Amino acid sequence: NMTSIVYFAWQHHMATKGSLVDRGANGGIAGEDVCIITKSSRSVDVQGIDNHRINNIPIVTAGGVIHTQQGIGIGIFHQYAYTGKGKSVHSSAQLEWYKHDVNDCSIKVNGGKQTITTAEGFVIPLDIENGLPYLQIRPYTDSEWDDLPHVIMTDDTDWDPSVLDHQLTNDKTWFDTVPDVGNNDLLDQFGNFRVNLTLFQHDIDVGLLETKVLPTTLIHYRTFQHAIEPCLPDFEKLCPNFGWLGPIQKLAHTFDCTTQYGRLPMSTTLKTWYCSTLRPCRDATISSSSMPRAIEATISSLI
Image (cartoon, rainbow, N blue to C red; front, side, top):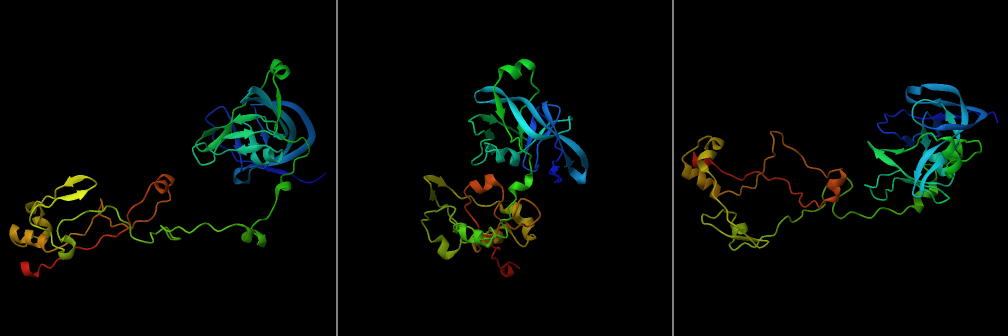
């Protein structure tokens, strides 16, 4: 078989003693953290960042001590390109082709297990660091080779990553078989709120909304079993905001005749609000979408 095989792998910074489980790699690479068991006559080219390429890398069978739910064992990795430097890199695709279940998602996300479950029932834990999954592995000793169970991780036949190729985008029947996502009554397709929501509901004892005039006397609002007493503004401090247009009594009269629906952001820049793309924010209940209204005031009578 003279077919040219190229393994793609990207260099990652590894702060822990672990080998990367990489979905961006289409073939496994054996580093200095494993032992070489056998060496084949085949070789491959390894290509990485900036198209940097290493040619004629030998294909080997490597092994190393790994952790499982049954204790430590020796993982056997067939059809790995041997560089002998740095940490090993494991291809998720190559592992899955051998009927293993590679769940390299963090347990902090839905459905994440960060484990590799082999076809024989071994469960191998993975460590997530900086968002990347790592498999703890080290070279074995002669006594460990004799005493520990051997866990076969990849197939020993010639590995060709193209066996997994399948073009789904051009499959016209696929679009008809996938159900549409349910309509979101809260947000539209751009992430904007469809309707206004009620943030709080108040029982008001006077016709405040009908007259749109702030009362001059104290009024109690009943909200969730708490009594809230409105307080009058400090009109003396507000005088500079109104250009000192008259005495404090006229400023108070302005407040009596206006709605005060305006809102200012906590900065000098006016902002438009959108639905957050952050997961913690999406999980929380978002309860208001109304935009600020300008203050409706007529000051001609004050001049």
